[in-house]
Length: 281
Length: 307
Image (cartoon, rainbow over all chains, first blue to last red; front, side, top):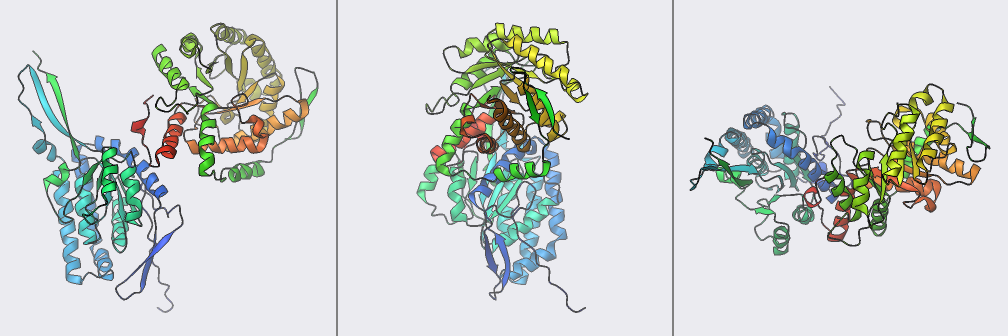
């Protein structure tokens, strides 16, 4: 066939289950390792961030109110969708400079990790919660609850496994998230957004913005309706002023290795609630 | 629709009602909604929106305590900030009027009561005027009644007109707002006709909706009413107020309405005496936007009261 028109994908934001362009109309370009343009990617503004937080807030309670079993099923479905798009991800990672063997391994590891976290959905609460001994005719329980809306600065390297490793432990317990990714990893993040959009994950549970992380981080840290920020994706020398700002609005700041798998990462995004209940006679 | 006439109650003079160009009306409303408000005007616009607000609770589950807390919020919307003005009025059911009068004593917050078989208006005119007189006796400063859409849409405009006249008489000194329930009228022509009819019958305010049906206030509908008010003022030299109500939840929507009123009727109408916004959840969003202007960072619903 001659004269075939190449159809390139438009990389847009992922907010409230839809794929809008930035309200600012701005874009930035991402080139492949040869310097050829791969795509012009939407550059999110602080107003896009505000909309994403609004969507995440609206989705949080319904997501947390689903049964643990149902959340686990939905996350498992995401793994199934990732599995079916493996070749697309391998090609994508290769175009942004990952060699083909590492790319294939990164996809496998990502899917395995996602399933590992999906399995925790109806188990973490038994392990992390407790029945506490008290001197009185009461039951005293400590139960974990999701923190709320979490802002995630997506790791740039490894772009796929990094984001998967930060995303899964946050949403498994009923948090909703706003991810900000930048540069090459934006392409991976948006494609993960496309997987989530087709996997029964309710709109607003995961919102993905692409743009300038240093630009958006102060808005994320200052936003009073964001309960935790995960800054694992950027260098540990974060501006102390930002940490002070986070402290001033009692926000959790999480910083971890970008490639880890542990129950502790789930508990990073949990609040422990203790309840007293009289023992009936 | 062709041009028709309505007789003005006060003078007996005839008032012309012209048809509405639907396409231009909607285009005009849409273009006014794109007007951007710059940061230094935002605070003034938000304060104006609060000053023009009728804080409303019209639930079957309303209690004296709920009304009292609504009145507290009406007097001091943001207890942490003295600059935030109080709202224009609280809007409640007649049964709650004396609680609201008690709770707003000593402030300039007015008490508005719905009355007259709200929200349908379908009981005898005697029962409705008695309801109105009772609300006024309990101390309501403003009365919100509904237009008899049943009569109006059936073509019995005369009856709808006379019922408003009777309601106006029952109000005495209290201000009368007539709710047209624009979502039930079906067309812009009907909205303009109903607006003219209510004004000619003696309404001090015309109001869009009860808030009880999903089709409520919208920008083109309010523009349509504002144009009717402008025509009426030109023909009679009498200025009638407008109240937009139902479905106005965000600060951005509120200032779209301010723009429409200001551009159509002039700044004279941008005051609580001539323009009102009826809302229950709008105030919190306006307060959040004010906090955002003051602090520089986005605020969240955890930082305002749960009503």
